[in-house]
Length: 148
Image (cartoon, rainbow, N blue to C red; front, side, top):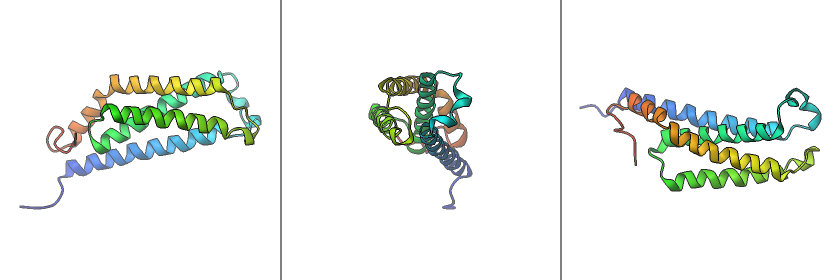
């Protein structure tokens, strides 16, 4: 009998690592984008700033949840709460730290961030069947390596 890991479990680890990398890269891109000086933002001027905040945080939330679920297994309510709390705290930090870059700290931008996080949580919860299909496809047995 071999102690070598099953190729499918290695595939799941690679998918989970890519999902985590995507979440981290997107997080950094979002932070960088919100800290650019205002004169560099002319190309997005046609799109409402609030929609950019909303969409950015919704996508970030979905990326974080997918990476986490692919890594640890089924997410519990405490995991969703942790993502919500971390998201709203990061959103506040993000707004406050924009001031030295010549941008405004706007509570309405933060509210758009919070709404984006909530919608991201709901969208992930409703669409998580896709993540479960990836896990089933990548596991040697359906959800065999998926910890609860």
